[in-house]
Image 1 (cartoon, rainbow, N blue to C red):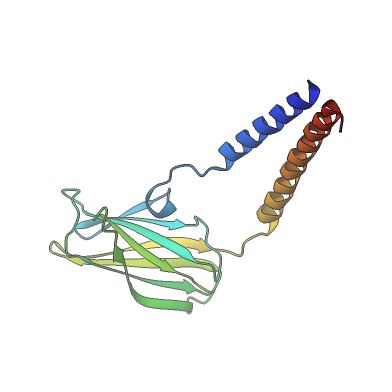
Image 2 (spheres, helix red, strand yellow):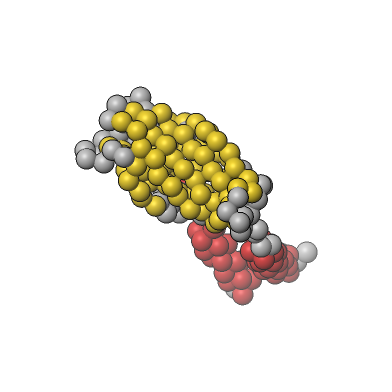
Length: 183
């Protein structure tokens, strides 16, 4: 009966680990944390995924653009973003201009931009909106920093430990089963 208990325990551990690893429901584009600013007649909410981007890695920017007074979507609007990171003397170390945001068709208040920046530092992203109610712009600060390899290493160590436990439990279960069958 002991091998069966070990197998059930391994199955329970595997189920709990799988449930813990399943990603939770997140907001639009994986962005869960938005910063809101007023941009003329608009309210712009800005968020990135990952929350703290790394240089050279893909970054998803999700924008929520609504009319400030009514809270409604802005049909036919043009949404663009530029960015810059400043050095100690105030000069731009790296910048880009006029990246167009793509309207998220399933919910017309959301706009998406996918990009990568090559330099670590405190970036300022300027979102410009032009539509029927007028024009507006808002600045958002994002810290881009070099990533640490520690979380990835810990994930691999945890996965190896988990697979070792499952393998040992299966070995115990199959060995006991063979002993019972006389083989």
